[in-house]
Length: 314
Ligand code: ADP
Image (tube, rainbow, N blue to C red; front, side, top):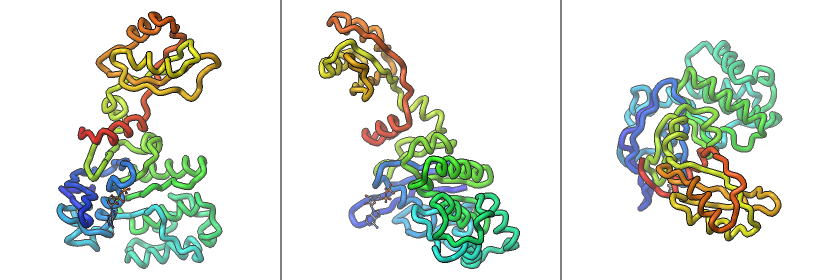
């Protein structure tokens, strides 16, 4: 369990984290999102004991990070964006090194074997790290976070730079780890959160702008409907102007894929208004037939953009 209570971090005259409060329960995989500069790294560095907070409390499994950093650290496995791998060591040498460094007490061979099996690196454990693929190196990074069997795992952008197959594998591994651990996954890839996390917390300018189960956020937070409309006109400017004039249309942009001779647009509507009849009538009155209208599901990207651009607190 992770508890952040009223944490603020000020650098000079810049408030990076602003009175942040949240908890992550055991067995939760929480996606931690926000645009660059939102305060994610600062928060993770405070949690992992690398940075002090200006005020507030951070508690890991009942241990106050500031009062007893050593004990708190024993309960945290951290995979930074650049894992601190010793490239000239073999995988096993490196894991033994981390084991000593952490002062782990579980029976060493059995513990490291179990970690290697869990992370799928048993077959490469005698290979030198620098000769491994990026995907395997990332697995080794995850393996080092598991040494000492910490209850809390924090992953910072764990799939950056991996190829699509490796991404799928690493996500599956994180999901599996979430069954036994409390996980914070920091990422800017919203589809990653959809694939892995059961909860999403979005911060912007050091403050929480959304916190809810992943599915609910998709259903509720956006509160808007999105459509793709195809208009029988070549004049995209005219199409945009006409659609945006319809009551309840909040935004409209050209769709990249317009059929020959048509203008396709993506529009978002106020959820309290059914814009379809108005759209149909407006276009008919201007002799621009509406030849297609379909619902497009909102993505987390849409929601994220809206929440962070408006800075609105939910
Ligand atoms: P994120 O990880 O979400 O991109 P950060 O936590 O790195 O955001 O940064 C939050 C804000 O704090 C940014 O405006 C950043 O410039 C500022 N900041 C972070 N670290 C420092 C530092 N050591 N000194 C001064 N400002 C910092």
